Structure formats: structure tokens, C-alpha cells
Image (cartoon, rainbow, N blue to C red; front, side):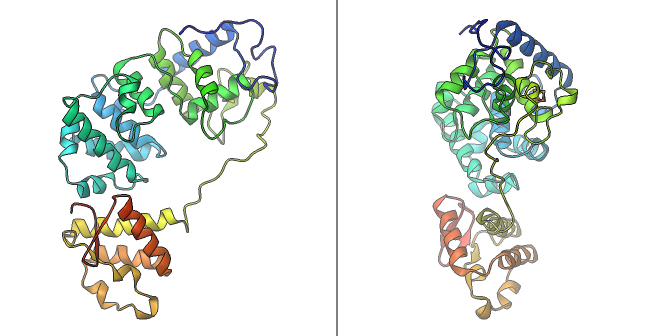
Length: 347
Ligand code: SF4
């Protein structure tokens, strides 16, 4: 699709961005933004291993799944280890699920690892071990949403797609609509608007460049407007950077169920490594009331497992809560409960 060209309503004529949620963008303004971001990306982009030439589509897909909600600095070492171990979808499909969860390490949201293995199984079994190219085919894989499909199709196969993650949305909304931040998730109208901003040529560089620009310059909390090469035409900057009426939800970690689920998973992983994994950890080491807890239970475990279990018990002494989280982990396929013991799946 070609860029919508208009001289009626761009940032110049619609400085508040209030009458048009997603304003049309004047062609000269759009061309300047495209050229600037693409040149900035070519000069400044981080040297991430999955951006190297000849990186396989599978390796790019893995990097995209790992990078969702996890900073790149934490992803990179895990991605390298993962690709050494499971260089193709068939390798991951054949791996024990417990090993997969273990290798996921502390990337968070470990259900992503399970979905990635399910996607690998489909690719290996049904697609001749080849990652599909189009967004439609990619979206049919388990755990692959529209963002990931567009990113893989663009970065691995050079297809023209609209990659719309939080970083991209924030940059476009600030530049052209004069708002501080986008809504929680993009609707059809925003997606069509963003699609019309993708250039016909260098669309891969545009997709990667806007993402990178949002990650490094136009960040959520501290955009570097002073150094920004687009400060003179950025609508939000020209308006004096008004704060959005709604504040973003900050995700707490300490004291949350996510933290406690992570601690239980850490105990199961420690048991897996220590060799207790085949039989798992007795459930009562997690769930016994503080008053009934027999410290000898910990002595029966390897030192690393005992330390991880002790951490769970430090975080919460609420038996109902721990029981609920254990059931959730089992329901999510992240753990299995057999004969009063808890272990990683398929240990
Ligand atoms: S001027 Fe500031 S808000 Fe506007 S694009 Fe640049 S960094 Fe983002």
C-alpha cells in the first residue's frame, strides 16, 4: 500500500492532535521522518547478534519471543545459549520440556518457553522444519501474535509488514499525534494508520529503526528530546510535552504472585539440576504451616534446592496462596504433580 499523501492535516495544521486521533501526515513531514530514522538506525543501531547477516529465521523468531517484556541485555546471553543447544525447530521440539524451562532461566513469563516449544513442534512436524514467511502463516503457530508475526516476516524474510510494538507506537503517537503515550493495545484504526507510514523502500530498516529509536531515544520515561534529530517537527515536543491524563500502570514485582510463582519454579529448577528432579520436591516442603514445618524436610534436599525452597517459605507463609499458585503452575503446564511431589514437566 502506498503512503497516504495529504496537505490538509499533518502535524503542521493539527498541532494539538485532538480533533484527529490518528492524523494524516503530510508527505514532506513523513519523508523527513522516514529518512531521519532510517539513517539514524544505520549509524547507531546496537550490534545485536540476531541482526547479523545469515541469522536464521528460527533464531530471529526465538529472539523476538524472548525480547517480549524482557530487556535485550538479559535476552542476549540466554539467546546465545539457546541457539547453541537448539539451532533448529526440530532440536527444540525434541528437547525435554524440563530442559526448555531450565534454559529459559530468568527471562520471566515462562509460558512463552512452552509456547515456543509448541511452535517448534508444529514447524518441525508440519512445515519441514522451516519457519513460514507470511504473517498469516506465522500467526497460525502457537504463541505467535500479530506483532511477532510481522517482526519475523520483516526481519527474517524482508517482507513488507507493519511492526507495531509499544516502542513503535509511542514514537509514532508522539511525533504525529502529539500524545505522550499510546493506549494499552492497538486497534484496527491505529494499525491501518501505522501501515500507511511504512515506506515502500527500506521498510525493514524502518521497522527496525523505529523500534530501536523508541528503545534508545524516545523512551517511555526519559525521552532524549534535546538530542533528538526530529525535535523540530515532533508534535508532542512542540506542544511542550504535555503529560497524558492517565498514568501508565507500573508493574510491581515484590510481593506479587508472579514473584512467588517464580520462586516456586526456581525451586523446581534447582531440584532438576541437583538430580532431585526425577521425583520432584515433596509438596509439603512448600505447603506445611509454619508451626508444623519440620526443618528436617529441607535436609532431605540438595543444598541448592533447600535454599530455593527456603526462599519460597520466606516470601509467603500463606498455605492457600501457595496451593493456588501450585495449581496454576500445573494448569499452565509449567509443573507436574505426582504422588504428593511437584516437579518440572517431563523431568
Ligand atoms: S522530540 Fe522527544 S518525544 Fe519527539 S520523537 Fe524526539 S525524543 Fe521522541
